[in-house]
Length: 238
Image (cartoon, rainbow, N blue to C red):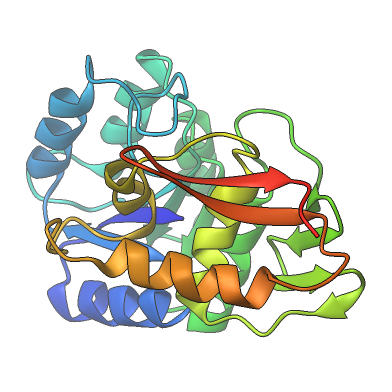
């Protein structure tokens, strides 16, 4: 899952990025509203990496309210006016009811007042990511494989599957697109941040690790390498 943080307090932004990456999320950071507006404009008109209607390669946006250039309320309102439904979590030092109403009326999905505990931010993010833009069950399932996006717990035939945070993110991506061939570029777009070297073999490394952990009798799934195209998590197997 990929998240964009727009926060002008660089120390806070870096801390949030490090914390979320430790949880397995891919995280990009921008430090002013003008840069975010340009990023959104550049992404409009390009096909979305997961075939969705939003045409943004992010599963969630974290927007500070008080940003240089363009404030968070305006950014959120512009996104909604463009028909984009990506979840938005607003961060602000303002804690009045009027400010919260303004944030929600601008199209934000949730509103978190600074200072906050990282664990609370993480819980809010997990809740928002459980509300996909397209209807999906709370628990993702294929064959005997299940994944709860909120608890980040994977099970195969009822038994826990020990996965690293990045392996969990990769598995979630495959389960949201079952039986679909995902190219390496598409996987990088959704599971790694923009600073990652796109010429590395990191996708193949993690796909290999995930395949080995799913290769159990009775799994009912198999992670296939589609030569020249990418990878697909399909139902069936031994």
